[in-house]
Length: 365
Image (cartoon, rainbow, N blue to C red; front, side, top):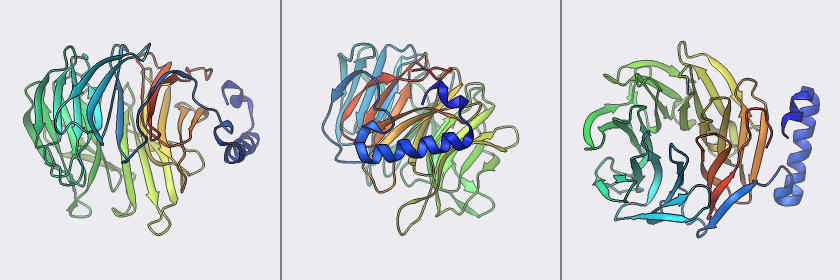
């Protein structure tokens, strides 16, 4: 929709969006817009439901991995040329993260019953520095480096705790149960993120978001509380200035699997107040989210109710207005902003991976 959407009235905007969605249903990818692809590579179609993509901090590399393949690949971010393959047992990646200095790549791997599921690689030559760590009993599904690169936080599939490792020796320095004092139980944890100042860790879980102190794991506050069985927070991200934290939230009807409350919600860290909701009309399952490097845009990759398709959608953080919605024939697993925020890397369930153009802060493409 671009910058022109800012001049629409809310009613006009809603009608325009409804028209575009209807056109998308009738004409495939032509309803909203297909991604403006800079380069792409075609991998096999999904056999599972997890894959990952990451941009190196200097913007030179894109890393991709998937949980049905032990190869994590490094691509030239400008041309799409294959630079290096990181291959090893138990390297079927659910999540991948570059360290802030770009020296290391962490891969969280494995599924149900997989106990060796965390690796640390050296980017320069692809050497596995520390590998096949027994982080969790059923695979690692979320990773986050602290801003100084000295710590790596991890969450596991169906796990009710999180762990923090020292980098690069990967010594375990903390193993904290995500205990909810109001419910009196530990809560399943799906996502982790460090605050930019390294003081807090946000846990996306089956109640909402628990904010804890990194130093001792003590609970600061709970955000967006819901019944544990009704909600899944699949991703969390802090704004670059650390003032806000966003969560990709899915509250789904357990009988029909349709969205009841599926959106990206942003909270103020200082008091936990909900300040903005980013939505597409309540039709986004398990959104994977990220802020642009300058913090003016937030994006989410998601699938849609009872459909194979999905989108990567971008909103203006200041207003919540949609400024770009890239439609995918099969849902996008994951996306990541480039260093400048003008490109993003993606990985679709169709096996298509690559780099596409992202909206800039003015909303132009």
